[in-house]
Image (cartoon, rainbow, N blue to C red):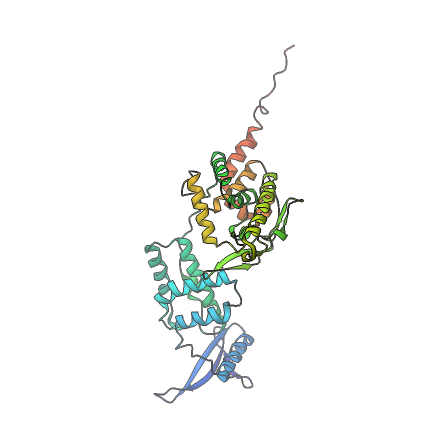
Length: 386
């Protein structure tokens, strides 16, 4: 098909391979005096026309940057701030920004965006692995640059997403560490002696995430019905704690409370009322179930430090992290024969496959217990002889 020119939209044409192209003139080359053209690519005429329209608008606004001169670092900054800042949760945006600033820009930020090749990224991934980064972190770096290049392709800045031609390191399955019954009992005994002990007891009795617990308010706790409603979480962002809604609909859930947890929360509520009286006007009542002695939110890092202190007192190993309390909750339920779908909903997992994969280590015991019920049932009974 020959060249076509739309009204005020530059030149649009189709190549022999079926790809649609659009060109815009953005001035003249200072050395040759020839027109400087920028080309955009797409699968349809409408797609390249839209890219061209955006480029023309950028030229009019004075914000257009020639793709040939745009570096990877410059594009990553544009992508982060103009495309992702309002699209992502603050915590996710912050993690993207760290990947860009600490890993991507130092290694490939100087390259022209259009000169970026798969081997540049492959070398980056390999070097990060050699430096000791985990396969999970390297894959996250890949995810960030992959998304940024997808947007660049959408904008007609690159012809293809070169990250698709890279080979990623395989993920090692994470070892799930749950407390044994004996460890759980030792830990519970230590909790009785600490002001925040009830918070960790709630984690053991509900499987809540740290952020969900620290963001929990009394208005979402029904001690009569023995339920907790998860509607927000406390999340650290750039050194500050902010409240956010749960990531998924499944995470917005109602969790029934064991009787021991209800009794502990009632006693905790009474103690908190005394703290309010003692603090007087300096108390900042945020309605939080777990807070400092003057009502302010607990810093998540301080909460972790408290856990490490209690872990040591209980004689638990360093392989037991805070998340192990959530794993212990799920493991106990499965060991007691609870349905996997029920456990998924209690944990707030978005998909049952996540629950099944995470707690596959519990299955062998459950299977053995189930098959043990057949013992003696497959032996033919002898009939008395005549």
